[in-house]
Image (cartoon, rainbow, N blue to C red; front, side, top):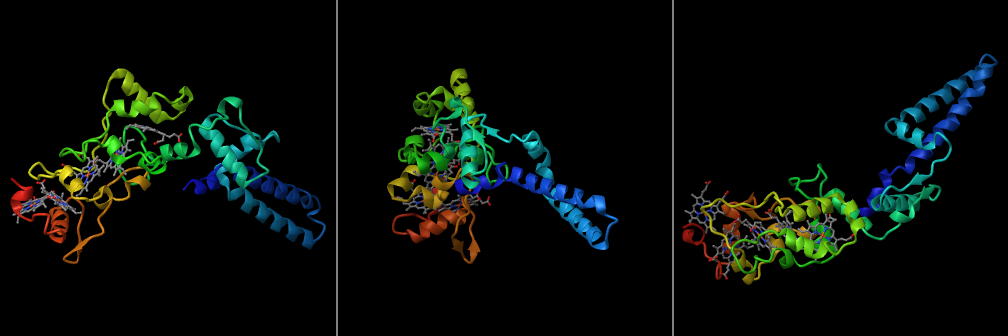
Length: 280
Ligand code: HEC
Ligand code: HEC
Ligand code: HEC
Ligand code: HEC
Ligand code: HEC
């Protein structure tokens, strides 16, 4: 995922621009002797076609590229630590790219992956609802291997797994240096902390009231979080992951009764299929 990123960073643009400038010059010169011969006329037409092709192709980025390259100095200057990570990655792809990283942004934290996860967790194209903070499970539970139970501490003890309080987040984040606030999610987190307001996370999994489900019994029976919730530690923006199971040749959606019953049937020594197990 991080490796895909540099492809759409601005470093491609100056190159395209200079190609279009080159063709422009080429089409100007023969233009003067257009009447001279049929061959030159043909060449001009061809060059013009090439110019139209080249200048028309990267149209959406033209304005930006002109602004950066117009004066001939296309040094890209970083405007934040995250921006500096992106420029460095872009320069690795294209060694000709000139970049300048002011000392205040020449830092290790926030890490490049944190910057990318924060963007991915709010990606409107990705599945799942937009949460009040772009919080990434991939970054916390995956890369930093923070235990699920550290944040969802109710899971093995009580019925509900629960989501962590602002206090749990701040247990780590109050120790981060102030520059870390350049990530918008951290500023939102700290604002909730100062105003003593809980974060209103959008809940994804919700059973109807008449169904009884207890996390603790499942965890104690050795059922993994991922069996029911999918590979959470690989996901930036959390969403309901469809179940792979097929019941009576029909795929079963998560949280439907058939999904619960399927697994209970497979674990029949342990798990009951009695209606009253799940319904009072
Ligand atoms: C056990 C410590 C710990 C806890 C608890 C914790 N974080 Fe983090 N958080 C980190 C670390 C470590 C990073 C990444 C540092 C880096 O790579 O730059 C991070 C990065 C982030 C980022 C940027 C990357 C991303 O996920 O978008 C946000 C936003 C964030 N945390 C919000 C939160 C919120 C909200 C909570 C509470 C629900 C929380 N954190 C709880 C340690 C923690
Ligand atoms: C047997 C399947 C199953 C397993 C295993 C499981 N969950 Fe859940 N989880 C559910 C269901 C079903 C709900 C919806 C519960 C409800 O609406 O009462 C849920 C809801 C949640 C919620 C949000 C609602 C709440 O309870 O606050 C969180 C967070 C959660 N699970 C985390 C975890 C974690 C972490 C683990 C592993 C330690 C885990 N789950 C293991 C099925 C499971
Ligand atoms: C640093 C804290 C943190 C860690 C570690 C963490 N989570 Fe979460 N989890 C959250 C927060 C905050 C939310 C609510 C925002 C969201 O849905 O992304 C959440 C939401 C969830 C939900 C969706 C609950 C719902 O609304 O239905 C599930 C499922 C879940 N986590 C499972 C896990 C599993 C499994 C692990 C371990 C692999 C894990 N979490 C590790 C903080 C954490
Ligand atoms: C991946 C397998 C699996 C899935 C999916 C599953 N369960 Fe279970 N469930 C178990 C196992 C194993 C036990 C036995 C635990 C024990 O009693 O030791 C169990 C036990 C239970 C119990 C009895 C324990 C108690 O709390 O008294 C209830 C109720 C229950 N499950 C409800 C549900 C509901 C509701 C769903 C669907 C939303 C569900 N389960 C989905 C595996 C599963
Ligand atoms: C392992 C848990 C479990 C067992 C056992 C179970 N159910 Fe359910 N049942 C559920 C869940 C979960 C739902 C909610 C499904 C949903 O929201 O789509 C549900 C929903 C229902 C509904 C409402 C369906 C609807 O479309 O509104 C009825 C009626 C029902 N169950 C009857 C039964 C009967 C009768 C039995 C015994 C033969 C039974 N259930 C056994 C978990 C269970």
